[in-house]
Figure 1 (spheres, rainbow, N blue to C red):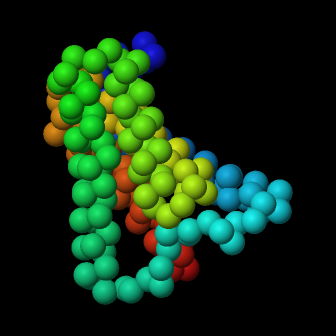
Figure 2: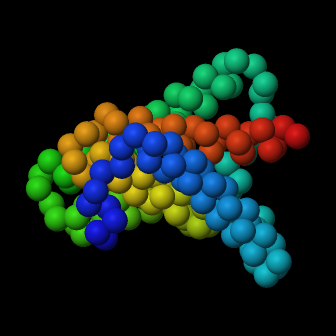
Figure 3: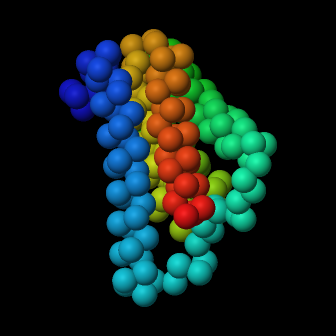
Length: 160
């Protein structure tokens, strides 16, 4: 966990944003392919993708939901954990619990595979980009950008 100790700044913020989006997309498509290849029943899985309305209100709601989810599942619990003086290991434990809840609330237990791991990735980006160093708004901004970019890419793929 030494890599988390040094806060990302400058060009490294862009690096973590791009890597976060790339890792999340690669992981989700890889896991989805593996589940389909393994003939695991994915019909029980909530895809989280409803019919997509192409109006500006849809894209505004996508922005608002990313901001809300990052505030509830990253900013609030990790802010409390860090400001209470918990050790890095305990802060990561809080991130794991928050990510499990994030995944489960996206549908059901199957969603832990996708949104739960994604939530943990967003939490680690939050911590690396300022969350462990009391730069919470910077960390919140970076994790929200990663979340929004990921959601946008998925929507564009679905629209194709």
